[in-house]
Image (cartoon, rainbow, N blue to C red; front, side, top):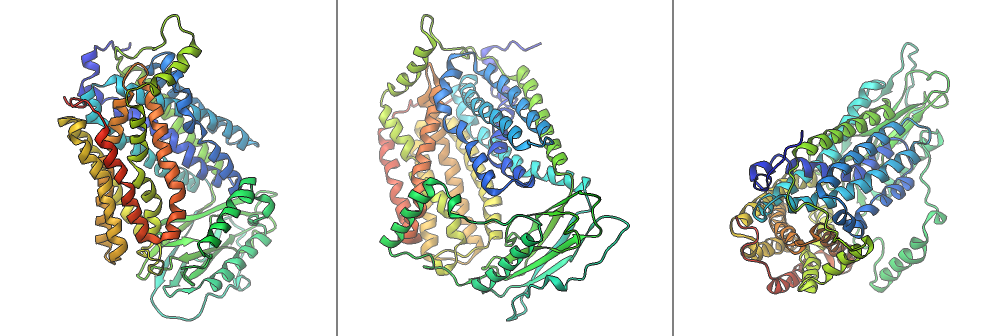
Length: 617
C-alpha cells in the first residue's frame, strides 16, 4: 500500500534522503549506458568502428531534442507518474537488449531497444528534474543540488567502470584461461629498434586441451624512437594480422568519407592551414615512444568451424604503456597456429620506471553482456518498485493543462510563456555566457597537459593525467558541488551569486599561470587542477540553482528542460571553435582569451534579479 504523504513530510530533508540519491543515480545510469557503454559493447561484439560511430552518435538525439517534447511531460499526468513509467520502460529496454544479444541480427534488434532506452531516459530526465522542484522546498532544493550531482556522477562512474568490469569477469570465467602479460620499462640505453620477426616464433602444439600460448613478459626501453621507424613496425604488424585473417584491415577510402567531410570539413581545414601558414608537421615532435610487440596462438585446432575470439586490452597499471589500437582477434582452423601480434607503445614523454598488465579474454562475450544487461534491467525494475512506494506526492505535482484548452494550444503556450518571462533575454544571455570561458577551457585543458614542452604543453604522461583527473579532479569537483549547495542553503542564492561567478571563472587563471611558468612538479600541477575543479563544482551550483529559479511557475518542468537546452548550446558552440583557435594563437594566448571570455559573466550578473530569500531556509 502506497504511503499517503502530507506536504510537510514530503518536503522534509530526512525524507528527501530516501529518494534523491536513488532518483539521480537512476537518471545517470541509462545515459551512460546509451552514450558510453554501448560503444564498448559493440566493440566487444566485433562491430566496425565506422558503424559504432554512426549508430551510437545517433543515440544522442533524444537528449538533444528533449526540450521540444518536455511540454508533454508537463501537460499530461504527474511527474511522479512519468518517473515511474519511464523507469519501467527503461527496464523493458534493457531486458530487450539482453534478450536480443544472442540473435543473428543483434545489431538491428539491440539498436531498436537502445532507442527505446534513450527516449525513455531523456523523458525520465525531464520528469525527474521537474519532480525535484516540486518535491522539495526552495531551501531544500538549494541544499541538495550538490548531492544530486554527486549521485549522478557516481552513476556515470558505475556505468563506465563497474559494468565493464563485470562483463570482463564473466568473460574470463566462461572461456579459455585468460592471457595475461606484464610490460615493464628499462632505462638501459640502446640504439636498436625492435626487430619484427614473427616467423622466428617457435609454435608448439598441445592436443590435450585448448588454450592460448604467449610470451608472458615484454621489456621496453625508455629511449624514444623516430616516428617513421615506429610507423614501419606498426604497419608490418597490421599487415601480418590482416593477411592472416585475425581481423579486417581498416582502410581509409576517400569514397567512405561523408558529404560534409568531403565538401566542407576538409576544404575548410585546408583553407585555414593555408591562411595561417600551418602545416601538419608544425610544432610536432619527430620522435615517438618506444614500441614492442607480444604474440599468442592456440595450442590446438578448434573443433570443426568453431572460431575463438580474443579481446586484448589494458588491464591495470600505468596507462602511459598502451596498445597501439584495439585488438579483437578471430582464431579458426586456418590461423590457429599462427601468432597473432599486438603492438605496445610507450608514451613519448615517459621517463621513469613503469609497469602495466595486459590481458586477453576469450570467454562467451554474448553471454557476458547478456548477463550484464539483464542485471541492469533487474536493477531498474527494483528502482521502479522502490520509487513507486517511496516517492512523495507533492500537492503541486499535477497536470498543468487548463480546462477548455486543447492539447496543441497548451503545448504551444508552454513555449510562449517561457519567452514571455520577465527579462527573458537577460536570462538567456546569462545561461549562454556564464560558462563561456569554461566551455573552451574544458576542451583544451587535457591536451595542454599532455602536449610536449616543445609544443608549449606541460608534457605529462597519460598516466599522470589519469591520476590528476581521476582522483584529485573528481574529489575536488564533487566537494565543490556539495559545499556550494550547503552554503547556498544557508544564506540563499542571491548572497552567493557573485562569489560563485568568481569561483566558476577566476580559477581558470591557474592555466594562464601554468602556461607561462611551465612547472615540472606534478604536485604543483595537480594542485592547480584541483583548485580549478573545486571552483567549477562550487560555481556550477549557482548555475543549476538559477535554472531552477527561472523555471519556477506553471510549466516549471518544461521550462527547466528548455534552460538545459540553452545550457548545452552555450557549451557546444564555443567548444566547437576552441581547438581551431588554440592552434592559431597558441596555449598562452588561448588561456588569456579564456579569461577574457569570463568577463561577460561578471557583467551580465549585475542585471540578474534573484529573490533574496530564494534557497534560504
